[in-house]
Amino acid sequence: MRHTGWPAVCFSWCNDKKHGPHLARPDVINILAIAPAPPDAPTLVADLESNGLLVCCRTQCANLVREAVRHAPDLVIVWEPHPGEDLFEAVRLLEASMPVPVLVFTSDVRAETMETGQAAGTDGWDVNGYAAGRLRPLIQFTVARHRQMRQMREELGDLKRRFEERKLVDRAKGILMTARQVSEDEAFRLLRSASMHAKQRIGQVSQQVIDAAHYADAINRAGRLRMLSQRIVKLYALAAMGVETAGSRALLADSGAQIDQSLQLLDRTLSRPTFGDLIDAVQHTWTQVQAHLGSAPVASRLAAVDQEAEHLLELSDPLTQALENAGLAPTLHVINVSGRQRMLAQRLAKLALLRQGGALSATEPLPVELAPTAEAFERGLTYLKDIPLSTAAIREATAAADLRWQDLLSAVRGGGTPAARVTLAAASEALLELFDRLTREYEQSMQLLMG
Image (cartoon, rainbow, N blue to C red):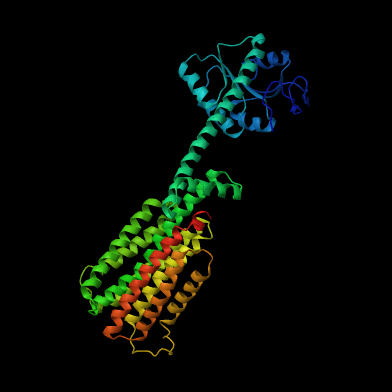
């Protein structure tokens, strides 16, 4: 760690024209001089050395940062009658890369220049020359002021960090209190316990809770876009076939409103540079789907609606997956799976309505156009039953979903009869409601939020 106090122990190589290269003397402050060559500034280096100070390098303003990195000085002294932006920019870069005390001798008496110099990072500013006998006190003052300012900045930075951490803790407590209906004291106890267990600051744990909640909500909303892409075709088909026409059309309009709302919220809450292209692609395709939904549903347009809706599904899935990957929490995967169950139930119902064929027996395998979706749903249901992330409410909902799934399968096997279609509509909507509840339960799970 470079020492910036007084005096410094230095073993750097020095170079001057009079004596040539030699090893720096110990216990002498190491100075980088920024000054023109004689006769423009004939005495600065000589005066420093006559005071027992070591000038390890004399260079121009343009080389300040490079030579500072090379020599690691304890102090930079600048002789510049008329400081300009080139000096101030060099001092700013020095302050950002390797902070070191900077003392400026100048002839510029303007207060504006002094303020600019201070803002850039100078620690000492002496106007209208210097006397050799004043060099040591001025250097001592500059080094002391630099040390004091560094300490003040560190204390201010620590204060800001603690203030920001307090805000994070308050937000995380609010999330836990709302999600699991616990008291403020209990929410803080959970954060503190997780902090100790993970050996992290409580602010870091709080940020993880906030991020988990943010991405969990985004995954849920993006997953709804997948589901709604299939639901609108199911409802369009039901309305076109005359199955509960008024109710189907009302749910179709509600589905469109949900897509609009989800896209608006995702666009407002997610990073545009990161996810904007995915959101825009979904929005563009949704506009194409809407063009088919402006009039009463008819069977002749069903294939075109389904084609556009499939494109909407194809674009919504990468958005959902990208959000899961961005969240970095393995537990976020369960929200993706649970949300996908909603889509698969709607998709199977849609495919059954579009299928041309008669009824199937209880032992007869599902047709090839239906089987992959049904198998995917059953794999997802098994996964949700087996994972340890569970509560009484989650277990109750998965058990109910299992029963409703059997109702949907029976309706699918019933073929295209009016009764089978009514059962199919009711069972698929019941599954949607159950997996909506399940997904919210997972989203608000304490294990998920706490990682």
